[in-house]
Length: 141
Length: 141
Image 1 (cartoon, rainbow over the protein chains, first blue to last red):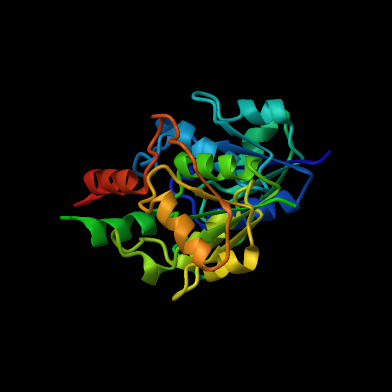
Image 2 (spheres, helix red, strand yellow):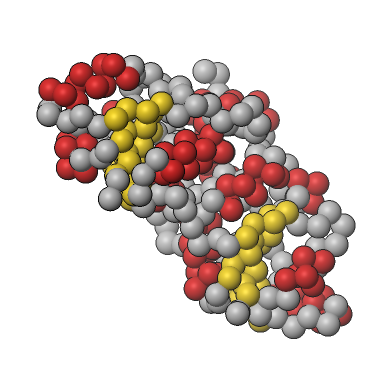
């Protein structure tokens, strides 16, 4: 059983998320997605959708076996419990593979770190872009 | 093989959509979802997400077997092709079961029409509510 872990905020789901999750699943047998806690999203605006709803929507995607909320204080605790063979990173996730590898090694964890490429150019493939479009089209209505 | 058809716009997916689709699937063996064409959404603002992207997101939900776009001119054509045993209607869909039944009978179709109840009160369970929240929180940023 080869476990894969993917992570993210998944505020407004779009095909870029699907691509990231489907590619992640293909790398192993079981995909667990760790969904960022509202309180831990600090490098961008607070998500529109509350954490439990974001988790529930990710859990409904066909290729996802488990979707859990991240730990509030220790981002590596779920990794320690799941012991994945692979952790995938999205093309635009802001941490470096090298730093992540080092931080995991401190915990005695050595999963393979794989960055998933960008999903084409089709569609509204960014929560931020979808939010901008909503603000442009619906403000003042 | 008991086929079920569900329909809708599915602009910004939320747990209310999941509930409608999961309840629909439970009524039969195979669930086909007919996703409204952009040009046919007339009783509310044009969807934010283009039709093919809306279809693709619905198709990724675990309980959905097939997701297709509606016919541009004849809303009953896909029903005629699928020949479902059951058509489900969402709690807030604006057409009446009785009128739908009559219109289908004209085509020689007599599926059972079942309205699915509302999904609790939890979460942001309306595309419109999510859009309002985005406009409130992000306008001017």
